[in-house]
Amino acid sequence: MAATSRALLRWQFDLTWSLFEYHLERLEAADFLWEPAARCWTMRPGPAGGWTPDWADTEPDPVPVPTIGWLSWHMGWWWTVAMDHLGGRPPRQRTDVGWPGPGGPTIAWLRGLRAEWLGQLDRLTDADLDAPASFPWQEDAGHTVGHMLAWVNAELMKNAAEIGQLRLLRVAERG
Image 1 (cartoon, one colour):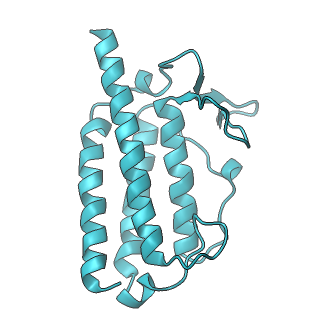
Image 2 (cartoon, one colour; image 1 turned 90 degrees about the vertical axis):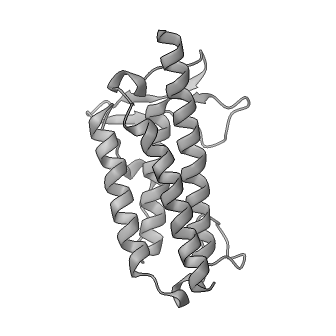
Image 3 (cartoon, one colour; image 1 turned 90 degrees about the horizontal axis):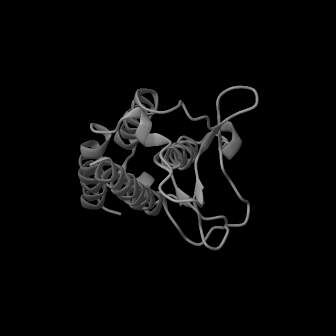
């Protein structure tokens, strides 16, 4: 990938994040655990403290509607694992990625992940974008670090839209 591709990937990330900030700035703590449907995935208090995400190793059909809390944890999970891969560290397991809790702690966590991600992006060279990447793909299918960056942008865009839509529905429900 050329420098233009690097610049374009960064521009796309920044654009997506700016749209996400619109919702982050307006989220309230109660929004995170609001259950929009009877069948949903959320974050639950863990037996030893902290929070535990609802999870199934095989995706159920129909897929439960996630809460903002679950989506924000999910973002933190895939993002930390992407950074582990990009930084050459062993990737964390799903159960190793904790959720800070509703409201400000999670918003600060997500903003911190953004800052860490930008730091990693700024260290990349053009040659790095062409290096092989196995994440999020389980086998080497010819994907590169550039592909992984594009995947992160797509995941961020999708999760930001989901969180935004849930926030708008909650606001509408409250009147």
